[in-house]
Image 1 (cartoon, rainbow, N blue to C red):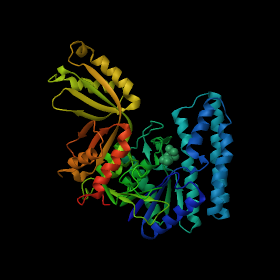
Image 2: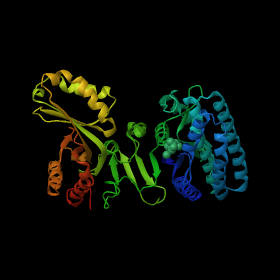
Image 3: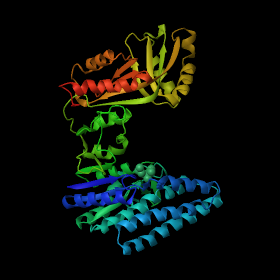
Image 4: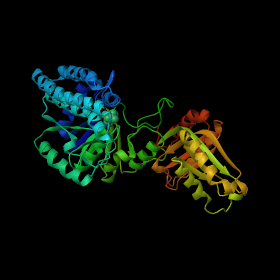
Length: 473
Ligand code: ASP
Ligand code: MG
């Protein structure tokens, strides 16, 4: 099978970690065609991308030597790791190449200091450098364990628009270029070590896909190469049924559907972002989350398959404000909902949850706490006339947490809501508001911040204990 796999910054953050990566790749290579996507190194004492960005900004502030100051540190880190993993001849060649790349950045940094201006286009040159040096280091490490491997800059593969710092891929062109470069390498039995995070415009100017963009790079490449599977190697065994800091008995799920993953990401779980994996979802390519430091664990597979079971996971979004707009005249007041949502949108706030009972006496909506003040101000302005007419009488705001129970199998399964509310009632936890979309993929509850951890535990337990549940104990 053809597998595109990505290792994040911590998975390649030290010589031991990269040694582990080399073993995983060697093992996978025995059975599969392998394309690797790598992030910049996140060493315990040096976060490469952050430090490059900081240096570029310092240059713009007038410190032309900022880059030259971090160059020795970056060079020392990468060469120290290389010395442990690659033969001396490889290390010597790598040193020449890395020095040239880093010297160029020091030069650029001095020019930026003279101009006193850092354009997003120039910043992309700096921020993407960590991936470019790391791909070369990792390719050398793979050759060190006897694999045929070569580093490839994604500037020659991923074609993007020119929104520097947040570029979007042009998929048709990317498909053509990537296949032209990588397919011959795969046919020749080579492992391609591709830089995450970066691409280039049609005219070849380097861009980046946004912070944390290596996951996106991996999805794009998996999609255009028609990979059979795409693996994201992380520092956890897979996707968990709940946050283990809150629920000690949380478990790794063997399987999740794309839509469940989307719901979970939305509701605060630290899984892949839906936008990131959209190129894979579109082509129905299965995704696996695996643990670099526990590679025999099968991880979580995420696919179009809806799987079985009902409730799968419980997540929570904290620091939320629930805004309630109410008044006796709201009953049958046509258009008031549209005006409420329009006002909140104009304030730039994203609405996380909406609930209105059919008595129409109030509408409540949840936004991030940081957005609440602006949202309420916009509502007061919009509803001024309705206040004077006493159609609307109050706008209330309270701090809360959204707790969400996720699982596509809940659709058409009676009793899930009952079981959830029953368990919360027994635990003495008050539910402030409830929302469930008609897709029935998730049930969202609003509770007081002080109840949120206990609510997550209680709901998780109620499904873990039940015989009909997909959260087996
Ligand atoms: N190195 C980039 C960043 O730190 C991309 C990534 O790690 O995914 O944002
Ligand atoms: Mg990262």
